[in-house]
Amino acid sequence: MIKIEFPEPAFSIKTENGKEYILDTIRKKWILLTPEEWVRQNFIQYLVQVKKYPGTLIAVEKELQLGELKKRFDVLVYDSSHKPWMMIECKEMKVQLDENVLQQLLRYNISIPVPYLVITNGEYCYGYKKGRDGLEEISELPFPAV
Figure 1 (cartoon, helix red, strand yellow):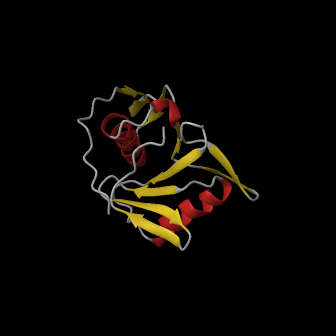
Figure 2: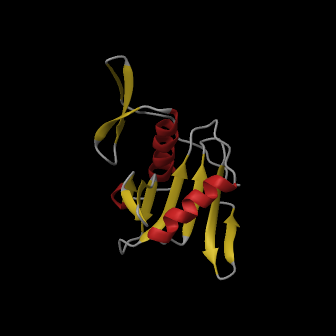
Figure 3: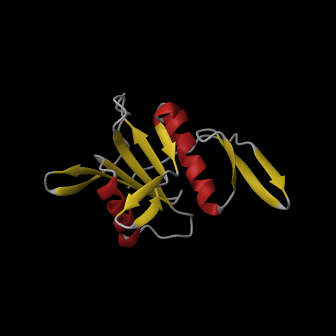
């Protein structure tokens, strides 16, 4: 398991028609603040503020094609050559990070291959590096490939 120490939240949040929205600094737009979005935004801030991943190399909730299905990944980090490098699947805190969550990320990885895979629910975080013999669990996120 990877230990994550989130930075102090400094989010812009607004209420509109009785619903809360959070400003996504990567997508540069207001997003409905769901429990999963809260995890996603905190994890993005961890990547940018703590791990020093360049925000310009992070994509959030983009569509991918999986056979006939259209899906959306949560977070994709590119390396300095703009090749997909790390894919992150975020779940709300009450969702257990089990084999189903990992399999979902592995399916997305068919469409967008990356060497690093991460699943998190904000409380727990597991990372994997793809090796010759399959997935190897990692104990910390690698430094950005920049």
